[in-house]
Length: 74
Image (cartoon, rainbow, N blue to C red; front, side, top):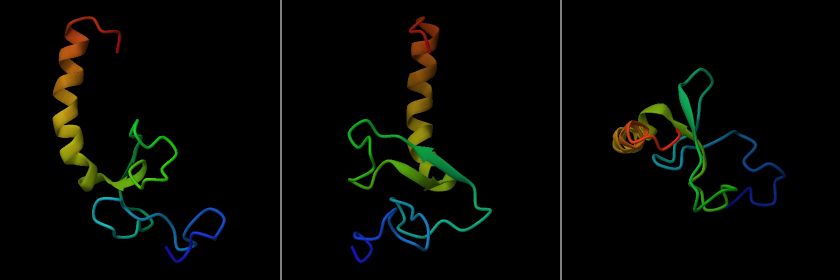
């Protein structure tokens, strides 16, 4: 990557890992934390566009709700 040597990454701001477009001021974003990429070096964890993150949450939310109903402590 062109800005790997830049402290803090790309000086133009964050880029969405899914669509590879920049985050613009005022756009809705979601901070995603993927256990396999805790520090974001693989490019999965970090800020995502809200709409890019929605399919992930649409799959995960029902599972979390099921665990809640079973008393899993969430």
